[in-house]
Amino acid sequence: MIYYGDEAGMWGGDDPDNRKSMVWPELKYENETYSTVTKFTDSDPVAFDREIFDFYKQILHLCQRHPALRKGAITTLQKNAAAGIYAFRRDFENATMIAAFNISSQAQEVVLDIASSEKRLFREAVSKRISTLQDSKLQIKIESRSATIFEIINQ
Image (cartoon, rainbow, N blue to C red; front, side, top):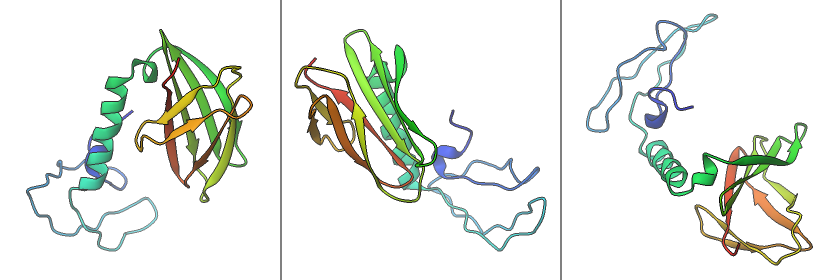
């Protein structure tokens, strides 16, 4: 779910500071102070965040290009609340996508059991890095507070 302004890096406090005018890249804004339930904040900059906007565009483009990111059967490959790791596989028609998330504050090495006897190739959807299965397992590194998405490219 993308909320109004997330794609531009907007933030806000408690009501009524959570509903603001949209920020646009061609406009300049004054710093803002807002209130929360418990305190008044220091002055924060208000600006359109091009890096976040480009990230949203990239992810939305991936979802448009790969129906298996939107439809199909989902199989959990790994969930480890203590480590902050969750990974799943999604199959739709002849396509398979794998998504892995790391919400912890440290990069993590993760081994996913893909349960395949075939030697399959996996391409990371953003970097295009190629990985292969080792004994039906896909070993990946996920940076802290990030995710990675793979597609199987030799089905």
